[in-house]
Amino acid sequence: MGQVISVIERPVTAKGLRKEAFPNEKRVRKYIFDEEYASLGLLSSLVPFSHRQATLLYPGCGSDILFPLFYLDRLFPQVENVHYIFIDIQPCLGLIKTILDDVGVSFKEKKNSIDFYWKGKLIQVDFIRQDVFSALPTLPEFDIYFERAFRIMKDSCAQYEPFIISKLKKNGVLISDSGFSQFPLERLPVDQRLGAYGEMIIGKKK
Ligand SMILES: C[S@@+](CC[C@H](N)C(=O)[O-])C[C@H]1O[C@@H](n2cnc3c(N)ncnc32)[C@H](O)[C@@H]1O
Image (cartoon, rainbow, N blue to C red; front, side):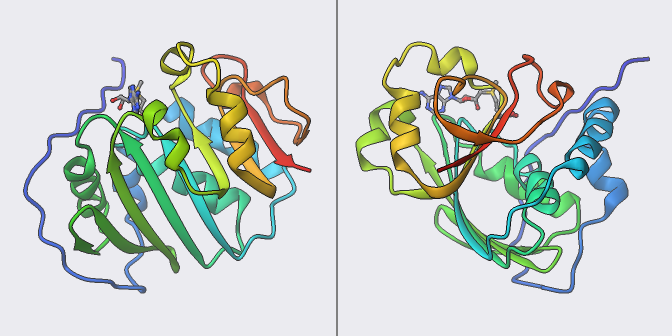
């Protein structure tokens, strides 16, 4: 029978920061399709980046807290501290907290922000509930851009991709499963099985 992944939001108590609490791999696996998990192994053939600190922007994040972490594990092994800016029109932070709690990651919270350790790295998430296209002029610069399953949404905004590239810092890294093919990025030779559309791109801004 096919694999089904469902998440039901429940009230979760913030238990505070615990650097030593690593995620429970078995429970993490329940949140990812077997095929997708296997394809993440394809990232290990790529030369990793050397960032130690980074700001990561993820528009249209939904409740997907885990995928950017999987990429962080494999592509940014030296990173110690990451500021995530998650943007979505839906209120997704409750689901994100439920998922973290399910996989055994303890966090501290403040309004629309949560901080937690992921395998010893400090992750600080600011969740912004907003239409990313209207938020474009107010976006800060970032070191990593992460996008997944947002192709249809950005189709309606021709300025979106050029704007994202302009806000990506020099030597910043773009990770997207669609678009951005026309920009002069230093592209890594990624296997197209990593993305659903056959357009997967991982590139560094020169
Ligand atoms: C197909 S889901 C992908 C979610 C997540 N990236 C993933 O891979 O699981 C698209 C997400 O984009 C969000 N979204 C749609 N239009 C948006 C907009 N204009 N600004 C920000 N988020 C938007 C939706 O609420 C939804 O969470």
